[in-house]
Amino acid sequence: MSIELNQQLQPVMQVKVTPKQIAANYILQMSSVELQDAISQELDENPALEMEELPTCPICGSSVAGNYCTECMPRKGEGDEESRSASADDLPGDGQTQLRDEDDEFDPIARAEADFTLEDHLTWNLHALLPNALHHVADHVIGALDSN
Image 1: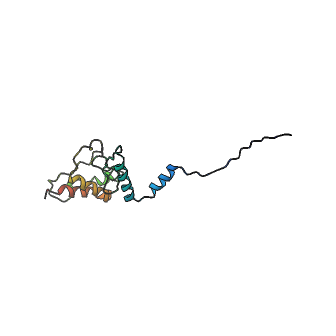
Image 2: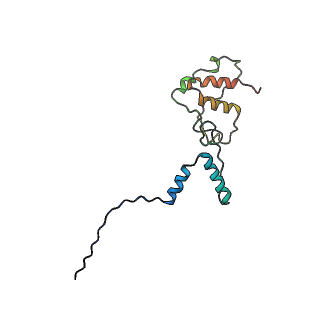
Image 3: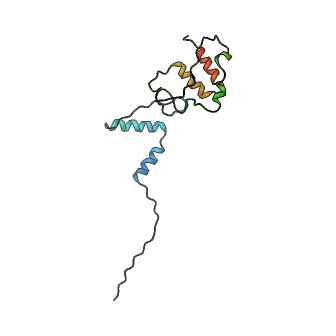
């Protein structure tokens, strides 16, 4: 009586869903309101969890570094030099208004603790909305505003 023993390897592909994948799919299907509710519930249930509130940009929704959004804040580009060639003397006005110095590069580290003034807010929003050719006009109009 003879006994034969054979071994064979056959590659078999199987799809296995892990618990992490199930949880990730569940979270990805949530709306933003449901996600906020789930986060709040987890924070309430687990005292070891803490939520760090980060300010977000009202225009694009990305996180804000200091008082300025690094996504929306205007950057110097090729067209900026031509638009800045016009000085305050070329624009109508009383001549006593001070335009903000635009020659400085945007430095988020230096401005992290700076106060966010109305002038900065208006400049930031208008530069995000207007084409580069109109930035000097917006700066002049903002510079002409008084406290009233």
